[in-house]
Length: 276
Image 1 (tube, one colour):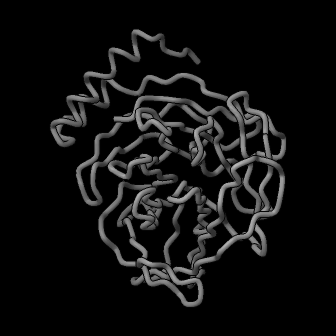
Image 2: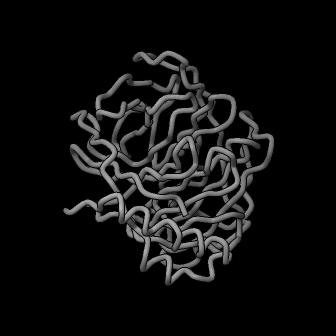
Image 3: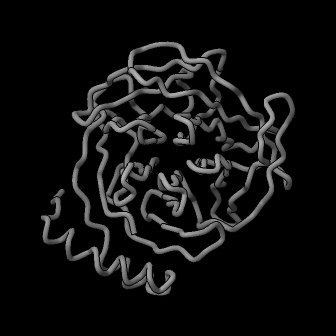
């Protein structure tokens, strides 16, 4: 795989800015000129075999958090820029079923979406919230569980959004047709089921989602394409994703100017590319 040089990255920037300024009307031009990427790190821990989500640290450090897809215990890996695991955080009192995404929220919180439902048999899905430790070490972290239910039947979902400013939570369903963005009530209740509301359509087969740190933009990933939005229900700018074995994760950097895009698989790469 050939990685682009810095000139290619600079060349992509004005095209992306032009597409964004036009409110997404130049999606074809953006797709043709964007998509440059560089290798950021590799997830070298042999325990990380199905990385299914990425979240930036809520502190001023270059740590990324990830977790495995279904079949693993309720744990999250903190990975440094070299790809080394700094800590494993076990979610206290949680039995994971199908964790699909992780998001950074306000007040140093991290949220794990147990939202997968390939067979569409779940009447409720779950989201787990915990506080990111200021000093990273392997430990069990106190966790709050929220139960969610759709207003229109069962859905499979792999994208979780938490606005880092307002704390509002969204679930993005995964479907070949009729996918949607569903908003959770605010505040969330840890005692009763939280009823979701469909607020917008989503592109097909979305596998991951992330807000920018200031909450002004968000990105959805289908694995092969990335869709950058300025508002829920707005028109996205689409850019091609790096060629990955099975792209399952995305996170917007702390500065908001770049995205981290990852994949399942052993020793899987995490690429960095411009945020439209």
